[in-house]
Length: 425
Image (cartoon, rainbow, N blue to C red; front, side, top):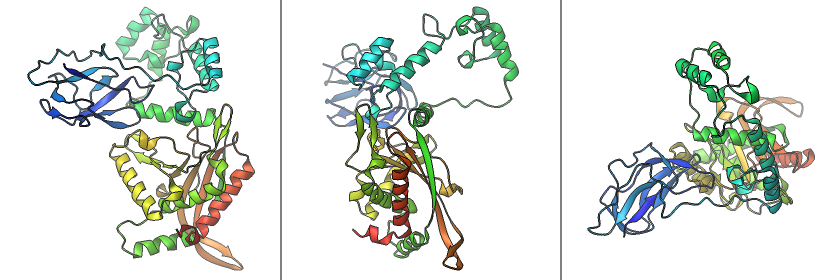
């Protein structure tokens, strides 16, 4: 009997993805565990493996690289020898084996609030650990839904004349504010939009850009962010890296690798900087998994180096280099970006000294690294040239107060100014 190959759900909120290409051709004999195709969600690219054996049959109108596909959509079949392939429609959703979304993670108290407000938890994006839905998420979703004018079909309320004029003028009504009753869009709203348009081009939002935007907003609106900055003497750090470079080793640790390693030392001494806000208290992870912010063509991605405090400097350098290469090649998986306990972001390469990084919930803090610049500094009664570095720490004031955050930054500063003793394994 034919085995149906459908689009899996990579996350509970995923409704569609992008086919990034087939790894096996039509007619290939497949074994369990063989990679069939690559599926991209708004967060990652995953290799989809076969659970069964058989001969792969991809229809002529099957998805091509870059095509959008819906969760549950039938893509192909695995057939026995001599078995005829069932007919496949490009937009058909599997009925025999529907893909059910995992139930949203939420506490009983949050579920009671959702029932009282008439909120469907399946439509709420969770800001808690592992996507867990909090009471604040439910209330914000309820307020946003109530404020959005809709028709019975869930579309923006708009008059027929306004819709016709919008088509004629090429205006997207989704971004308009209506002046009619209950926010209904009228013809004059559409015509007013034409007078506000400037010459230029529109860059459509990608799924990953929308995800980044939502996380950035959450880091400000759902936390109590405070930023501290400090300037330190990085001369010893620079000399130490120059010594690594002089060894002609195949893997030379970057400044970020050194900072990641020494940040783990400071976090082990100040574990509350890794604490996470939960409804019933603060959760303090035992592990130290540090995310590295990586600038890519697709947007900002944050691969995670696991168990940093147990790795040598060269192991950290090798792992971070591999993760950055995968991020820029678009090959990161969701697992490689999940469950970090702390984040470091570096804008020093762009000539930035200090900035305000944004917390990636449910983490407590994020460290911003500026440029290393040679400047005159006072040592005793002398003015001498030194390599100076500015750090910016944004932390959630709900979880830690200013003094503990400052003590963490003070410890990290000491580690970076005198790095060698902390790097001896």
